[in-house]
Structures are given as C-alpha cells and as structure tokens.
Image 1 (cartoon, rainbow, N blue to C red):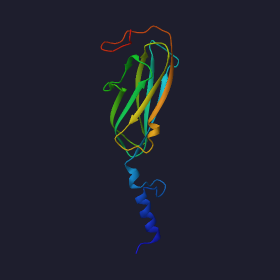
Image 2 (cartoon, rainbow, N blue to C red):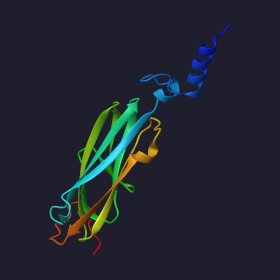
Image 3 (cartoon, one colour):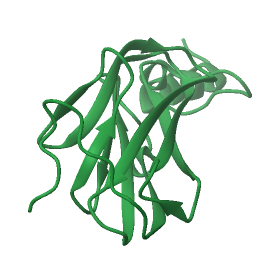
Image 4 (tube, helix red, strand yellow):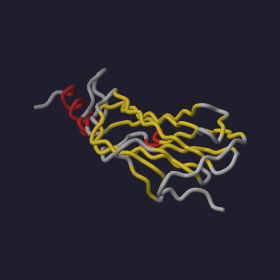
Length: 164
C-alpha cells in the first residue's frame, strides 16, 4: 500500500514539477535555457573601421547545451563582415558553432561589420542548440547602430561588397 506522500512525489515526477529547491524532475534535466545578448562598439560608428558586435550566449541550464549555433545578421547589406576563424557565412547571415556549452557558462563571439552606406542598421543575434530550450524567446537579441559618413574601405578579396 502506498502512502499519500509517496503518491504525491510520484505524481510530481510524472508531471515534471520541481520537487524541492535545487531538485528538478527528469523531464527538465535534458533542457538548456540559452540566453543571447548583443552589444556594439563604437556607437555611433564610422564606416572606417566599422563596428564590432559582441554576441554572448549564456546557458542557464540545467543541462549542458549540445551543438550550439550562434548567428548574426544585419538589416542592410554590408561591405564586409568579419568572422572568427572556423565560422561560416550563409543565406541567414554569419555564424559560429560549438559542440557544447556547460550550464552557467557563457560563450562570446565577436563579429566585425562595415556597412555599404552611412545609415542606422539593426544587428540581430540568435542562438540555437540541439538540446531542448524551455524559453526560446530569449534566444534572440537586437542592437541598433548608427553609422556616420566616412571613407568606405575596399572589400577584401572574395567578398561580394556593396552594389554599385
């Protein structure tokens, strides 16, 4: 015969409820809450040398996040977007990947951007992981940067550059 307290504990486990401070039911254990933050420097920026966007991804846990991808895209075409070694560019912007991010740890990636014209742009940073995220709304952040007139440097070899 089961006691009433034992039945409540079993029901709490099945429902995925928190049982006690610091104790999480099994359904929460495979989740990693990623939080994205993006900052710019300088702002306002000149076309030369452009702006650096620093994207930070923090894993609030409780689990380790697996196969994380961080992406940055801008609201206007850029003459140049510099990425750290090992990162990539595709139709969704530029990004970097990481195998895992432990709970309560932060991963920071810096991207350099030189726009085609002096205007205000919005950079959008996103993060995703193979591990389930209980709060996906905090996986995106935006930063607005104002560019002032200045000399536009030539695009690096192989870059698409700005339209004529």
